[in-house]
Length: 405
Ligand SMILES: *Cc1c(COP(=O)(O)O)cnc(C)c1O
Image 1: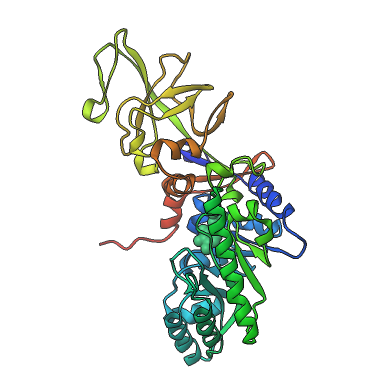
Image 2: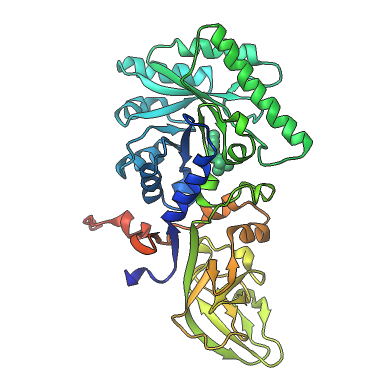
């Protein structure tokens, strides 16, 4: 698999399983896990990650849309899959054919889906989404509207062509622990339970009630109910700096590239586009490496990020290009083309995390892992050994014969 070794992300499946077990240990017996593997398992690759989790006993999977759900089915996921977002109602047939569960979040959407489903004499399995404070999709139950929401949900549950087996809500600040944030999360939970209570009085009950994302799974065990929906923690990342240390998570993704050329520059040499770095007095040894913003390595790292070569940090010099960038290796002995460069991960006692990326970019680790590009092959490790690699660029073309134009 040497051809892959320009730039690659290594995904440690043992670490994903470790993180999954850490979460499951905290659940009361009978509480299920729904592994959130949307966005290609947060950039880690949905197939190998989901199969590892399925093998380790994950009960359910969650994705954002029907394309991601079909991708899981094609890659051997046989457990229930919940689509968290919108699916065009006319795809009711595919939902049933693929045994997928669809989120139903409004009366309008429920009626549209019911119409398509009933017309084909099908039944779509659904989970009801309740808006308890996020103000995103969901039956509007916050701000004193629980009774109204319960009424509307009861009507939806009686529609033909739908089978409503679950109900859920989503917290907006379960990863923040000021008194105010805690009170808000508590209020969201109360609104959820109040709505479910009213539905129960009306004779509508759900087998699976769930509300905990990663942060709530860690911080609010009393809210676990029938199932929890961890995402980011499975990948060994903390939902927020405030959650750091709540569990012994192990980050699963490392990112590597290769030194392609080393040159010694005299003073006053301008490096990269815009001449935004100029070598100081005495000159510098500068290495070119084979990663750029088209790989998801942010241009914002220009003159401020760093990488690890031979166990030492090398600062980025000048602008990050589309496919390459340059680093200062003046202080590192023996750097030569072919050396492995660690962009995320550990090497000889030095370490860089996706949290470091997030801090530099003024964002969250979630965004950083999702942005690792499809041009970067994912290499899977298990038992300390490379077991597989996925190259999206080649896979997208496959063995198909291309029609001449
Ligand atoms: C993404 C998502 C999750 C998982 O969130 P994490 O913070 O990654 O655990 C859970 N539920 C819903 C509805 C989501 O959209």
